[in-house]
Length: 81
Image: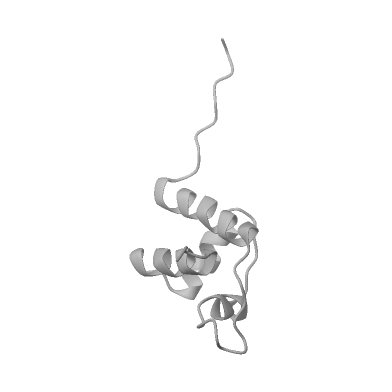
């Protein structure tokens, strides 16, 4: 049984003890808007009528935002070589 994007999203949420507001702020770090209603749909059980699959774009933006949240923004590169 393979993990879905929803499973990965749920596990990261629990592992980092994130609330919906935290996830919304993390996504905002990469200029990606997500609503509380969308998040609720991702975290529901698959047999729930309001369940929604988490797409690759949503998970990718969340992961990029999580990196910035945990490490801070990338320092500017020095292109003098």
